[in-house]
Picture (cartoon, rainbow, N blue to C red):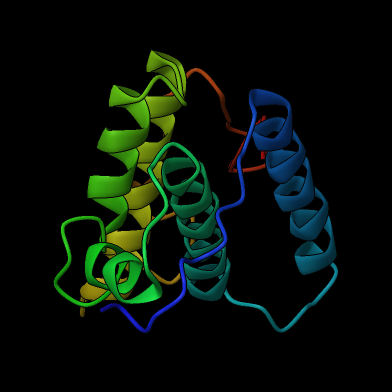
Amino acid sequence: MNDEKDEKVEVVSQGELAQLLATIAESTEKLKEIDLITHYSFAVIKASMLREMLRRAVRSKMRPLSKRKAKELFEGNGPLATNDARIEVAYALKLIDENQLRDLRIINSVRNHFAHTIEDFDNFASPKIVKHLRKSPAFDESTRCFRWL
């Protein structure tokens, strides 16, 4: 007998995904107002927001799961615990298109550079960071940001 209750699943429509992206864009403007925020913090915060958006989107397409099963899938060493996995599954489920897939992969690679390197990647002007960002036509060179964020 399973004593755990099923986790309530938020169904995310395409319109709601657009709304989540708009919320991220709004928060981007707020973050730009904070002078003390570093490029590192900005990259990690934005990636965290995208991670949660992808979790909700993928989760909305799944059958009801217990909290325990959802945790096994989306946390720790679960198969959907990483941004990479969530991005690929979101694409496979037709939650994002090819352009969004490309851009999310780029955003994730930039986040990984900021989060996992000991080299000096303290800003978006770093040649290695710009190299990733320029792969997307949605990248605005003047603001060093994606036009849809």
